[in-house]
Length: 232
Image 1 (cartoon, rainbow, N blue to C red):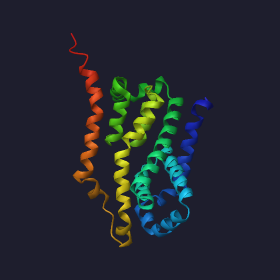
Image 2: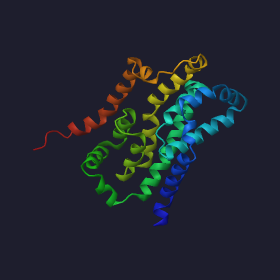
Image 3: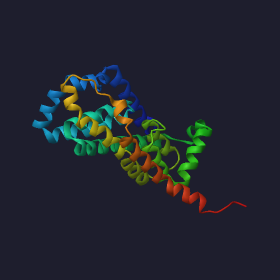
Image 4: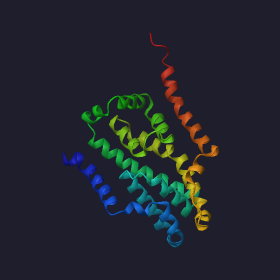
Protein backbone atom coordinates (compact mmCIF):
# COMPACT_ATOMS: atom_id res chain seq x y z
CA UNK A 1 0.00 0.00 0.00
CA UNK A 2 2.78 2.43 0.94
CA UNK A 3 4.72 1.57 -2.21
CA UNK A 4 1.62 2.18 -4.32
CA UNK A 5 0.33 5.38 -2.76
CA UNK A 6 3.46 6.73 -1.03
CA UNK A 7 4.72 8.84 -3.98
CA UNK A 8 1.21 10.20 -4.53
CA UNK A 9 0.98 11.27 -0.89
CA UNK A 10 4.37 12.98 -1.20
CA UNK A 11 3.05 15.08 -4.08
CA UNK A 12 -0.07 15.96 -2.10
CA UNK A 13 2.01 17.01 0.91
CA UNK A 14 4.31 19.09 -1.28
CA UNK A 15 1.33 20.79 -2.91
CA UNK A 16 -0.31 21.59 0.42
CA UNK A 17 2.98 22.88 1.81
CA UNK A 18 3.51 25.09 -1.25
CA UNK A 19 0.20 26.85 -0.75
CA UNK A 20 0.44 26.87 3.04
CA UNK A 21 3.70 28.81 2.81
CA UNK A 22 2.10 31.26 0.38
CA UNK A 23 4.67 30.54 -2.34
CA UNK A 24 2.03 31.01 -5.05
CA UNK A 25 2.34 34.77 -4.60
CA UNK A 26 5.76 34.59 -6.25
CA UNK A 27 4.29 33.13 -9.45
CA UNK A 28 2.26 36.16 -10.55
CA UNK A 29 2.59 38.96 -13.07
CA UNK A 30 2.93 41.43 -10.19
CA UNK A 31 5.87 39.48 -8.76
CA UNK A 32 7.48 39.35 -12.20
CA UNK A 33 7.04 43.10 -12.64
CA UNK A 34 8.40 43.94 -9.18
CA UNK A 35 11.43 41.63 -9.41
CA UNK A 36 12.17 41.89 -13.11
CA UNK A 37 15.48 43.75 -12.86
CA UNK A 38 16.81 41.49 -10.08
CA UNK A 39 15.93 38.38 -12.08
CA UNK A 40 17.45 39.74 -15.29
CA UNK A 41 20.70 40.59 -13.47
CA UNK A 42 20.81 37.19 -11.74
CA UNK A 43 20.33 35.28 -14.99
CA UNK A 44 23.02 37.36 -16.69
CA UNK A 45 25.47 36.57 -13.89
CA UNK A 46 24.46 32.90 -13.46
CA UNK A 47 23.09 31.58 -16.77
CA UNK A 48 23.64 27.86 -16.19
CA UNK A 49 22.39 27.88 -12.61
CA UNK A 50 19.37 29.93 -13.67
CA UNK A 51 18.53 27.56 -16.53
CA UNK A 52 18.77 24.53 -14.25
CA UNK A 53 16.68 26.25 -11.59
CA UNK A 54 13.98 27.12 -14.13
CA UNK A 55 13.74 23.51 -15.31
CA UNK A 56 13.58 22.21 -11.73
CA UNK A 57 11.03 24.79 -10.56
CA UNK A 58 8.82 24.25 -13.58
CA UNK A 59 8.96 20.47 -13.18
CA UNK A 60 8.06 20.86 -9.51
CA UNK A 61 5.11 23.16 -10.22
CA UNK A 62 3.75 20.77 -12.84
CA UNK A 63 4.25 17.81 -10.50
CA UNK A 64 2.13 19.42 -7.77
CA UNK A 65 -0.43 20.49 -10.41
CA UNK A 66 0.01 24.22 -9.82
CA UNK A 67 -2.50 25.93 -12.15
CA UNK A 68 -0.48 29.07 -12.88
CA UNK A 69 2.67 27.55 -14.33
CA UNK A 70 2.05 29.39 -17.62
CA UNK A 71 3.09 32.60 -15.88
CA UNK A 72 6.50 31.05 -15.36
CA UNK A 73 6.62 30.43 -19.12
CA UNK A 74 6.19 34.18 -19.64
CA UNK A 75 8.99 34.80 -17.16
CA UNK A 76 11.21 32.32 -18.99
CA UNK A 77 10.70 34.21 -22.24
CA UNK A 78 11.50 37.50 -20.56
CA UNK A 79 14.67 36.15 -18.93
CA UNK A 80 16.01 33.78 -21.59
CA UNK A 81 14.32 34.82 -24.82
CA UNK A 82 11.70 32.97 -26.84
CA UNK A 83 13.78 30.04 -28.13
CA UNK A 84 15.90 29.19 -25.10
CA UNK A 85 13.20 30.11 -22.59
CA UNK A 86 10.59 28.06 -24.41
CA UNK A 87 12.95 25.10 -24.73
CA UNK A 88 13.73 25.12 -21.00
CA UNK A 89 10.02 25.19 -20.20
CA UNK A 90 9.24 22.30 -22.56
CA UNK A 91 11.93 20.25 -20.83
CA UNK A 92 10.77 21.17 -17.32
CA UNK A 93 7.08 20.67 -18.09
CA UNK A 94 7.71 17.29 -19.74
CA UNK A 95 9.75 16.11 -16.76
CA UNK A 96 7.07 17.24 -14.31
CA UNK A 97 4.26 15.71 -16.35
CA UNK A 98 6.16 12.43 -16.64
CA UNK A 99 6.62 12.30 -12.87
CA UNK A 100 2.87 12.69 -12.40
CA UNK A 101 2.17 10.10 -15.10
CA UNK A 102 4.43 7.51 -13.50
CA UNK A 103 3.03 8.09 -10.02
CA UNK A 104 -0.56 7.95 -11.29
CA UNK A 105 0.21 4.79 -13.25
CA UNK A 106 1.63 3.17 -10.14
CA UNK A 107 -1.36 4.19 -8.00
CA UNK A 108 -4.14 3.60 -10.52
CA UNK A 109 -6.43 0.60 -10.43
CA UNK A 110 -9.69 -0.72 -11.81
CA UNK A 111 -11.71 1.03 -9.09
CA UNK A 112 -10.35 4.44 -10.09
CA UNK A 113 -11.04 3.80 -13.76
CA UNK A 114 -14.63 2.80 -13.02
CA UNK A 115 -15.27 5.93 -10.95
CA UNK A 116 -14.44 8.18 -13.89
CA UNK A 117 -17.68 7.01 -15.53
CA UNK A 118 -18.84 7.60 -19.10
CA UNK A 119 -16.47 10.54 -19.58
CA UNK A 120 -13.59 8.20 -18.81
CA UNK A 121 -14.92 5.65 -21.27
CA UNK A 122 -14.78 8.22 -24.07
CA UNK A 123 -11.19 9.02 -23.19
CA UNK A 124 -10.36 5.32 -23.05
CA UNK A 125 -11.82 4.89 -26.53
CA UNK A 126 -9.72 7.78 -27.86
CA UNK A 127 -6.52 6.42 -26.37
CA UNK A 128 -7.29 2.93 -27.65
CA UNK A 129 -7.66 4.17 -31.26
CA UNK A 130 -4.42 6.14 -31.37
CA UNK A 131 -2.89 7.06 -28.04
CA UNK A 132 -0.14 9.28 -29.46
CA UNK A 133 -2.37 11.40 -31.72
CA UNK A 134 -5.16 11.64 -29.16
CA UNK A 135 -2.78 12.81 -26.46
CA UNK A 136 -1.23 15.29 -28.90
CA UNK A 137 -4.70 16.69 -29.54
CA UNK A 138 -5.37 17.07 -25.81
CA UNK A 139 -2.04 18.85 -25.37
CA UNK A 140 -2.51 21.19 -28.32
CA UNK A 141 -6.06 22.25 -27.49
CA UNK A 142 -6.74 23.33 -23.89
CA UNK A 143 -10.02 21.41 -23.68
CA UNK A 144 -8.94 19.87 -20.37
CA UNK A 145 -6.65 21.12 -17.58
CA UNK A 146 -2.98 20.29 -18.04
CA UNK A 147 -2.84 18.41 -14.73
CA UNK A 148 -5.78 16.22 -15.72
CA UNK A 149 -4.17 15.26 -19.02
CA UNK A 150 -1.08 14.29 -17.01
CA UNK A 151 -3.07 11.73 -15.04
CA UNK A 152 -5.74 10.27 -17.32
CA UNK A 153 -3.40 8.55 -19.83
CA UNK A 154 -1.87 6.59 -16.95
CA UNK A 155 -5.28 5.06 -16.22
CA UNK A 156 -5.67 3.64 -19.71
CA UNK A 157 -2.32 2.01 -20.37
CA UNK A 158 -0.68 4.65 -22.56
CA UNK A 159 2.97 3.74 -23.12
CA UNK A 160 5.58 5.92 -21.45
CA UNK A 161 7.35 6.56 -24.78
CA UNK A 162 4.14 7.78 -26.45
CA UNK A 163 3.25 9.87 -23.42
CA UNK A 164 6.61 11.64 -23.20
CA UNK A 165 6.88 12.32 -26.93
CA UNK A 166 3.27 13.49 -27.36
CA UNK A 167 3.57 15.71 -24.30
CA UNK A 168 6.85 17.31 -25.40
CA UNK A 169 5.62 17.95 -28.95
CA UNK A 170 2.08 18.90 -27.97
CA UNK A 171 3.07 21.66 -25.56
CA UNK A 172 5.58 23.29 -27.92
CA UNK A 173 3.17 25.69 -29.72
CA UNK A 174 1.52 27.05 -26.58
CA UNK A 175 4.81 27.22 -24.72
CA UNK A 176 6.53 29.29 -27.38
CA UNK A 177 3.51 31.58 -27.66
CA UNK A 178 3.76 32.40 -23.96
CA UNK A 179 7.55 32.61 -24.11
CA UNK A 180 7.36 35.05 -27.03
CA UNK A 181 4.96 37.20 -25.03
CA UNK A 182 7.44 37.16 -22.18
CA UNK A 183 10.29 38.09 -24.53
CA UNK A 184 8.44 41.24 -25.47
CA UNK A 185 7.16 41.94 -21.98
CA UNK A 186 10.30 43.60 -20.66
CA UNK A 187 9.62 46.96 -22.28
CA UNK A 188 5.94 46.80 -21.33
CA UNK A 189 6.67 46.09 -17.66
CA UNK A 190 9.51 48.61 -17.55
CA UNK A 191 7.10 51.29 -18.73
CA UNK A 192 4.67 50.37 -15.97
CA UNK A 193 1.97 49.25 -18.40
CA UNK A 194 -0.27 46.24 -17.87
CA UNK A 195 0.54 43.10 -19.81
CA UNK A 196 -2.61 42.11 -21.73
CA UNK A 197 -2.33 38.32 -22.01
CA UNK A 198 -5.90 37.76 -23.18
CA UNK A 199 -5.57 40.14 -26.09
CA UNK A 200 -2.23 38.68 -27.15
CA UNK A 201 -3.44 35.07 -27.05
CA UNK A 202 -6.57 35.79 -29.10
CA UNK A 203 -4.64 37.06 -32.11
CA UNK A 204 -5.26 35.01 -35.30
CA UNK A 205 -1.51 34.61 -35.78
CA UNK A 206 -1.39 32.82 -32.42
CA UNK A 207 -4.55 30.73 -32.63
CA UNK A 208 -4.21 29.69 -36.28
CA UNK A 209 -1.03 27.54 -36.06
CA UNK A 210 -2.23 25.79 -32.89
CA UNK A 211 -5.59 24.89 -34.46
CA UNK A 212 -3.78 23.71 -37.59
CA UNK A 213 -1.51 21.41 -35.60
CA UNK A 214 -4.51 20.09 -33.70
CA UNK A 215 -6.21 19.25 -37.00
CA UNK A 216 -3.10 17.39 -38.17
CA UNK A 217 -3.06 15.34 -34.98
CA UNK A 218 -6.60 14.17 -35.80
CA UNK A 219 -5.60 12.64 -39.14
CA UNK A 220 -4.25 9.31 -37.78
CA UNK A 221 -7.33 8.90 -35.58
CA UNK A 222 -9.73 9.55 -38.45
CA UNK A 223 -7.74 7.35 -40.82
CA UNK A 224 -7.76 4.45 -38.39
CA UNK A 225 -11.49 4.84 -37.90
CA UNK A 226 -12.56 5.06 -41.54
CA UNK A 227 -9.97 2.69 -42.97
CA UNK A 228 -11.87 -0.16 -41.38
CA UNK A 229 -14.74 0.50 -43.76
CA UNK A 230 -18.44 0.33 -42.95
CA UNK A 231 -19.52 -1.99 -40.23
CA UNK A 232 -22.03 -4.57 -41.39
